[in-house]
Image (cartoon, rainbow, N blue to C red):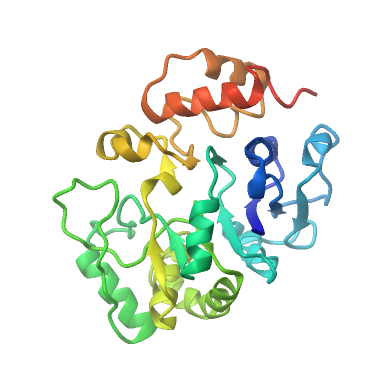
Length: 306
């Protein structure tokens, strides 16, 4: 099985450390994960080089630069776009991930299911997106934006994942880009059309949320098969998720450590003192699971010494 993971970010210690840790996670698992191609795309840069401090930890990571040094890059969009251009057509399954995702367990079972029954896959978003000056209202927002961008409404069969269980379905296939997976040919079809739809969405919403919302509209317009994944494949370190999904928490495969209440994602692997404090901190739920995993992967020692 040929897997690949494509990440993006800005060239700073936070992103360098997260990407280096992602490689450690893959290597620890062995099998298809350890053999997987890991691509990191950087934008917002003035120099096209990995600092000497991080170079030893970027062996086994393929690095690309999304634009000319010093060029304008509003909302970091060029590195996001370039990941799609770098998808290997020969891969079986490609995973586009945020840098603050850790691979805790093999994803080969998920990958095999996407080979056997091809689809674009991701975990449904936690909440409805905001619109400036308006209350959150999916029953208003999705039809308005879909009709403006596509000329028609789209089905909304999914429930936002961190809303109370009794909340009725209100979302289309709406995921954040924490984890977005599928066969390369489907990702290529998606990206070509998404680049055309996204500006229409940005004109209604804003440039920050447009890629996430446009993903839903593009998949619906193309009629591409989609699959809403269980929380274990993009599990947030969030007490609300822990309360709502205890069974999923017990089998996390991809953990998205995006919540900053217990530790700072941009510091935990970038600074030895922050790393040491993280391992000693009393934690619970998914944060404790992540803490134990990090201790196991690193042997309890800061993994990226200068």
